Amino acid sequence: MQENNKGIYKSLFTVVAPIAFQYFMSSLVSASDAFMLGFLNQDSLSASSLAGQIAFVYGLFIMAFVSGCNVLAAQYWGKKDRHTVEEVLALTMRYSLLVGAVFTLAALIIPEKIMLIFTNDSELIRLGGIYLRTVALSYVLAGFSQSYFGIMKVCDLAGLSSVIGSLAVVVNIVLNGLFIFGIGPFPEMGIAGAALATVIARAFECVFILVVMIRGKCPPLRVKKLFRLDNSPLHKDYIRYTAPLLLNQLGWGGGVTMYSVIMGRLGTDAVAANSIASIVRSMIASLCWGIASGVGIIIGGMLGRNEIEEAKKAGGRFVRLSVLIGVGSGLVILAVTPIVLNVITLNDKAQYYLKFMMLMAAYYIIGNSLNSTVIGGLFPAGGDTRFGMICDIVTLWCVVVPMGMIAAFWLKLPVLAVAFILTLDEFVKIPAVYKHYVKYKWLKNITR
Image (cartoon, rainbow, N blue to C red; front, side, top):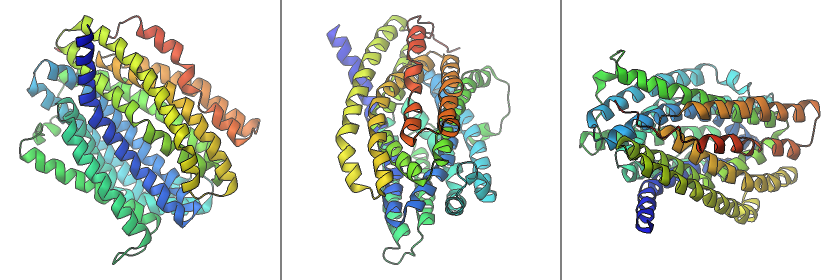
């Protein structure tokens, strides 16, 4: 039994390590933007944070499409049905590129109107409009690269996807410095420089992926399948499992975006502090998200091979591991708080807010680690994508967001009291998540 446990954890680490590292490297881009723009002025930092919510919302679509891909592809890959895996990739790419084109056009045509959703500060709207118009092309490019990264992780190429994504991050950070401050022959572009660096880094990802695909190192994309509108059973399955994931992502992400809307109405100090705390939390949470993704791939493969009882036991081990990872991540956040406070340049009020928001991030990540593993990993691995949708939407839109709006706009509570209320969502849903987990209805082989 102990030997079996070691095998399970070794498999998890093999998948999780590159995925977690890729998540961590991606979060470094936001940290780089915040750190460098913070040297310019607090308005540039706040504007890029609010404008970045558009990429966050777009990422929800991509996450849903890729997660739906993983639900099916992991089980078919476990079944060794590579032809169907290629079909799933084509379906995922079709929807990712279509939605990416919509976001690109919106950012090009109406960036200032988009910024009005998040803030009524005219300077933040102006700066955010510049950022969005410049970064617009990155959305459709991200649709291509993220879809491919998703299928590569399923097909035992997580290490290669991590290498490509991490190199793109390095390119992005280097170009950030060159474009934002105008180092060497480059003009000083400020907030537009951060946006342009993102576009170039996304293009780098796409070119790299095309090269490795042409060399046969990853599953090929059958272009003709992108435009083939069919009503096949596989397409129906993809829609069946992806639609709840998309609603879940939009419901959850919309709620999180509402946090930014609420904080955006509480002043630039609150926005700046919240953006820094969120970036640090995202960086530390990389391991949690990597575990959730890895758990889904491993359990999905086991279910595709009809190893139902083994998957059940492995799920229990992963749940216990997620709690330990969450506690460890919270302690890391507490440890880095003094460093963050000394490195980031904010005024006294924003600095005060940031100190306590970091404390909130430390306990929030425990619940986030557990729920990510169960709702984002175990349940979808067996095709159960509806429960997470219902749980997240009810928790956010019926409990936390209304409480946050009442606290901010009606009771007019202090900024930190509002921030505390907005960190309750992960803990409100734990009882329902655990009850659903122990029913084990999510343990299913969904391949045809």
